[in-house]
Amino acid sequence: MHGWKSSLCIGFLRIKLVMLQHLKMYMGVLVYSLVFSECALGSVLLVCLVIANSLSFMQVCVLDPGRVNKKVHHRYSPDTIFIGDSASTQISMSKSGEWIRRIKIDGIVFEEKYCLECNLFRISGMSHCRECNRCILDMDHHCIWLGNCIGRNNMKHFHVYLYTLVAVIYTKLMLLYKIYKVYLQGNGDGSKALIAVVLLLFAVYSILFGVMLLFTLFHVYASLCTSRSRDIIRYGIRSRPPKVKMACMNLCTIRSDISFAYA
Image 1: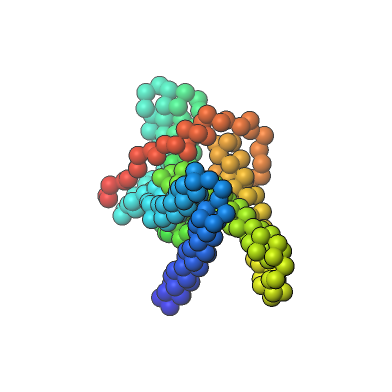
Image 2: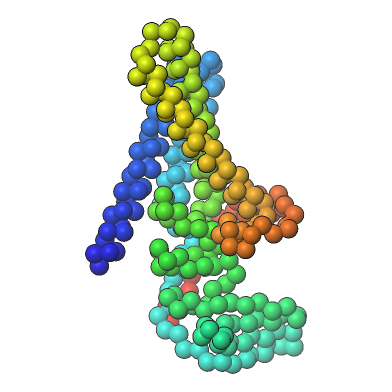
């Protein structure tokens, strides 16, 4: 019990730190739009960028990623059921003791593993999250910084959050560069301590920008290959041609939830 409470407190603390960091970057973008932006349209676009990033951040944190309701009972026995001449389903136990359901349709075999925690067979793309203790539809990964899984229902919001976050960090870098160029280096009366702080912040945000840019490009590649990032990490990069149309459809569509009634 104490371990569960401590992990929960650490999770809330982590989310608060992320929110604090976002507020600092938002303030930097707003200052840049009010002071250094050369046109009113640029200021409006930067404000819209902050609004889009904050809304996508809240949606990823709050929205149900695609949790599947648990079943209460499970009573399965090895058996094969034939459905017509071209389809059959078989429930058997593997050598490791896991229940596996094999569905054969027109000679093509689909396998579904059984989840002991949720008491249900996992369809293709469904995975069990140890942090949430639930099976998630099209689970990509569990984001510890956002405190939520990334799955079927919030994947597109996660991508919007990544794109806008990279733009926000880049704008914060431009703010620090302008402050150093205009107020410190241009006037020549800036203190060495202030210059050191600005340069240190510029170095930190440069590293953060590089990390987030690579992370975003990795997820863009995963979406183009219509795969999940956890599968690419586990099995490596497969030779799949990018499918831009299918990736756009997956990111722009929230499919309906699948729930299992209690037995």
